[in-house]
Structures are given as structure tokens and as C-alpha cells.
Image (tube, rainbow over all chains, first blue to last red; front, side):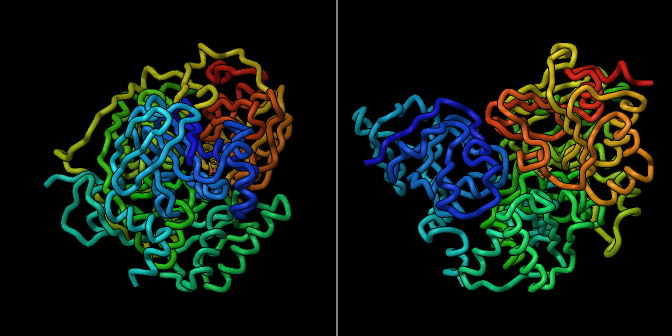
Amino acid sequence: MAKAHVYKRDHINTDEIIPARYLNTDDTAELAKHCMEDLDIGFVKKCKPGDVIVGGVDFGCGSSREHAVWALQGAKVGAVIADTFARIFYRNCINCGFYPIELENAAEKINDGDEVEIDYENGTIDNKTQGKEIAFKPLPDFAIQIVKDGGLLENIQKRR
Amino acid sequence: MAMTITEKIFARAAGQDRVRPGDLVNANIDIIMCHDVTTPPAISMLKEKGIDRVFDPDKIVVTPDHFQPAKDIQSAELHKRLDTWAKEKGIKHYYKLGRAGVCHALLPEQGHIRPGEVIVGGDSHTCTYGAFAAFSTGIGSTDLAAAIATGQLWFKVPASMKFVLKGRLSPGVYSKDVILAAITAVGTDGALYRAMEFVGPALKDMSMEARMTITNMAIEAGAKNGIIAFDEITRAYLDAHLKQKAEYTVFESDADAEYVETVEIDCTALEPLVALPHLPSNGSPIGDCAGTPMDQAYIGSCTNGRIEDLRIAAQIMKGRQVAIRTIIVPATPEIWKQCIDEKLAEVFYDAGCVVSAPTCGACLGGFMGILAAGEKCISTTNRNFVGRMGSPKSEVYLASPATAAASAIEGKLADPRKYMG
Ligand code: SF4
């Protein structure tokens, strides 16, 4: 089951998610080794496949580097849940087939270490640890389609 | 229905009579900016998917800049991929080493930016070009790949926010201080998803270079784009820089266009500002932070590495010595040459600075000026996030070239006004 790694911080930026010193490569496995490094050096070690990251407002602000999303995907992060997302990061997530979940006061509804199960289409997070169900607004249909197809390019190919 | 400049540009690009904020539109792209970090992955994605198409080789402008000249083997590989692709696809505007420069300084200088157009680039500070009454925004590699192949992208039309720049700047206060004040006023997500439209009398005294410093940092308030209306100053710049296709369409916001919010900045009352670590919105008047010791000064980048910026720094440094490591990076080869021709390089040499070749370099903690743990740098760049210029334990202070130059001389944050005329 997915575990939540909660960072009670606003404006977690792309430099923290993947520092620029590693941008001399676009190799996902290589990027994954440094995922969240400047925020939490121990993150990669403790993240199990499917785990989720919970942040505050404006998650992913800063650079347009899609490397941030690739690093998260490479580290097998299942989803990011945050109050709000920075625009380019949000778009990059969808384009990579990685679901960004917008949830007000996310870090108050989910505690560090909580076990969660996410239903993306219906927009619910089942917080098993706290025994409560949390609703979120699902992505618009066209964005869900892109995520389902595995990303924007896959989606474009399919539409041709 | 009344529309803003941004809305009018989207309407044109989508082939519609009108658009409203929130509308999803499929827009035709006029110019795509490509550099060495985000474009090679886009090229690989296209290859992988067997999409070989480039929608228009004449509308793509390529310049390596982030790790240029190649800083290590891996970045050399990125450059090689970019180079091979650009040649294979017959990209017309490909700036190689010797002509390559920091993208957002290079494209306007080389005449690739026109009012009324839609410009995207694989870099968050692509919003810079909005100074020319164009819509421009940063995108990631997948969007870049899609744009390269199809010449189109979907956008949600942003609501506009108006920033009224009232009064006139006093000596020693610059457009950098204005944008730091604006970001400090609204916060780093104060303009999230929105267009930041800058208007007001203070713009009349600002060159295109100075205006680009403002739109460059729109992303630091979370905005989708920054935009400034066309005027005589824009026209004069374009007359001097557009090499081909000199025609363009000028859109203006209607008098009754709708803005979700209006923010007024009293430029007359502004003091030099420094954005303290670790957010561009941590603006502090120099009077409150002067005296903080620095280890390095950095004058360059797409925010403040243009000739006007170097002139301002040189004016302050002339006949003086810097007290800390000071790195000057002219943003493009033309600026670099001007810097030599106007003997600014000599002033910098005499003052004890190092002048580098055009590159992004240390601005993003890439190379040529990386900070060690515990070090502090006064920088004319646009971002002071944790680890931005090196060690996660280093600190970046953002300011104008004048404040950076004065601080370099004193080795601590200093008010530039005491060094002026
Ligand atoms: S100078 Fe800095 S902010 Fe500008 S494009 Fe280069 S790395 Fe980005």
C-alpha cells in the first residue's frame, strides 16, 4: 500500500526536486537517484514504489525542467498531492502521464506515514490510517485521457 | 467584448474572433526557443515515438546556453544531440558556440521576437519576450516535442492581472527593483496561472532591456506570461533588431478589458531592493539589510546580463576595487563585444573582476561560479531557491546590477546610491 511522505512546506521548487547540477543528463534512472535531494536527502531510500508525496501550496514552482517529473517517476513516486501546483510543473505532470492531485490543506488531511489508496477517476483518497475518505476534484476529462494514454505524445499519436 | 492584449493574441493564434479567460484553445505557435537542457530530451522523445517531423525549421531558434561551452562529458553529449538534430532538420536559426548566448537575451537581440506572436520555449523564463507585446511562456520537454512536431499547443487562456507602475524611478533604482517589489507584493504564487500586464508612466523611462528584466521575472510570481504594451520604445528597438519579416501586428488591451486584480506600485517611493534567501518574494529595502557580508557577486543572466546592465555596473566600479570574487557574464556574444569595445571589460579587469564568455553557467548552479556550503552570493539573476547556485547550504541574494556592483566593492550588501554621480 502507498505510504504518504508529507512535507509541510509551501513552494517546494524544482531545484529541490531535482537540482540543476544533475541536469547534464536526461536519464530517468540517473535523475531518480537525486530525487528530492535538496529538500530531503533521505527521500530516495525511504520511498517505496507507489508512495505519494504531500506538499503545500505552489508545489513544483521554478524551472520548466520536466526532469523534475522524470525524477519523481524514476523514484517510483505514485502521485504528488498538494494544495496547489505551479503551472509548468502541473502541465508537465499531465504530459508525462503523472497525476497531480490538488487538495486544499493536504498536509492537514494526511499525516506523514499514513497509508493511502487513491481512486483517480472518482477523485477520492482513502486514508486507511485515519479511516477516512477524502474527496478531491479530478482532472478534466481531456487531461485524464492524456494521463491514461501515458502522456501527451502518446495521446497525439493515438489521435492521428 | 472587451479583451486584454493576451486574450487578443490568443484569439488570433486560435483563429477565433474572441476568447475568454478559462477557454481552452489550440494555438498556432510562431516561434519555438530551444536550448541544451530541455530540447535534447524532446528530440529523443520524438525519435522514440517515430515522429520525425519538424513543423517549420524556420520558426525554431536553437542556442545552447546552460552548460555552454560544454562543462563536462555529459553536457557535451547533450550538445552533440542538439547539434546533430539541428543540422539534420535544417534548423535555420541555429546559434553555435561563438554566436550562442543566454537564450532570452539572444532571441530579441537577433530579431526573433515580434509583437502579437505566440512564442514558447523549453525554459521557464521564456516569459521575457512579453516585453514586446507578444504572448510567451515556458514549457517542458514533452510540450516542446509536441510543439516542434505540430506547431500547435493547447492553452487555457489566462485571466489578466494589472500592475500599474506609477511615478518615476529615482536614481539608483531600476526595473529590477520594480519587479522585486511586485513579486514581494503578491508572493511567488500571487499571479499563478495568470497574465501579468504591466502598465503605467514609469515604463516610459524604461528601455526594452529594462522592460525585459520585468517580464523575465513574471514566472517568479507564478504567472503564465508577463506582457507590456507596444510603444515608440518598442518600435525603435524592433527597427534596429528585426532582420527579416519586419511586419507584425500590434494588439492593445481595450479600455474596458477585465482584470481579476489590480496592483499599484509607487515607483517614486521605491528604494533599491534585495530579495533575501530563499524566495524571490523576500524583498527587503537595502536600508534594512545593508552590511550583510557576501562571498561572491554575480552580474549576468537573462535577467540582467545585457549591455545596459554592464554599463551600470561599470559606472559604479570605475576606479574602485571589488572586495569579493566578482563574476561578470555578458549574456550574448554581441554584448560581450560591446563590453570590450566600450572598454567596460577594462573597468572590470581593473576592479578585480573576472569576465566570462556568454553562458547561463553559475546562474543555475551549473558551472563557473558555484557556491560552497555557507557561502553567500549577491546576484543579478532571478531565482534564489535553496541550492540554486551550488551547495544547498549556500545563499543567494537577488538585486539590480547597481546593488550587486556596490556590494562587490564593499564585500557586503550595499546601497548603490552612495556611488552614484
Ligand atoms: S540565465 Fe539563468 S534563469 Fe536565465 S535562462 Fe539561463 S539558467 Fe535560466
